Length: 381
Ligand SMILES: *Cc1c(COP(=O)(O)O)cnc(C)c1O
Image (cartoon, rainbow, N blue to C red):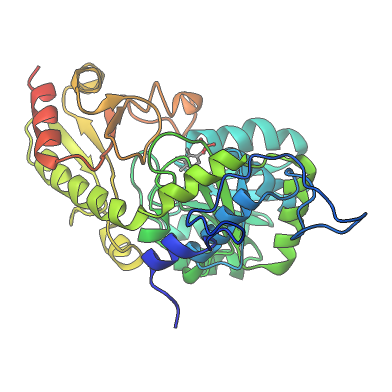
């Protein structure tokens, strides 16, 4: 019987240390390993760019919680994305991606990979007809799905988008950062690869930057492992250990993130200063039905459009006290951001530009009454 999610999150890759019995596998802060003769390695460890036990512990855990055969961890989410793209694509290849992907993903594809001859086509993937038209327009090798999207919380049907990608000869990648594997399991819906910024919900405490790729494709895993070692953007031992520590509580954190965000979304949906709330848990959200089907709960991220335009948005972003004005998301503490000038500054002036009256909330796991009071006070300033 497959163990439940929380059991895997706590135990996978985490056997007590064989020499001392330490319940928590130690941080192997070492670059190299003693060999018992030339080529006689202990457990396959030779040099820490190639493999390190703290990284193995994280990778085994990530594979188990995403339901994949292989996981690879990296120094950042973007390092993971870069390794995946360069493992799978060559000059002349084409990516079709959701049109409001994370700003850094947009920048990596369009400003870096484009220089090596990779074409990038943004499309509204919640519109499956538009998505198929983009696939039919030219041979496409890779489809990049982000759901829910950042910051407008658009929901894409993973099973439908993945089967369209496969029908047109492309592999499907899902950036599962916003949902986390507790809420959404893209490989089970047919995706070929999952990527994460483990900086966000997996780490969960805003104290470590990292990324990951998970897959069950043997041939691709070989290529990814080769490039992980050859280019070397690996996670260090302490970063891997911190991420594992965060993952143990992912399930309980996601439950609280989701219930706090749902309460705040309801409150804001009924507030006079708010034009629109973007949260897939609200029944009038266009992707609500799909989200209810492919997610266990609706997560801790939401965005709001303010009736008072950019001025009102800035006032809210700068007026909260418990919600800290900061980049990033997914930590236990609540954060507030102004995407136009912060996370999405790199897509200003492109079709991916975010309206300037939008504020994004990463709802933490504090007491929700305190969070509501903070927002109410900032909105009345
Ligand atoms: C943060 C983020 C990334 C990039 O990850 P880093 O760890 O910052 O490199 C990619 N995708 C999404 C959805 C993100 O939120």
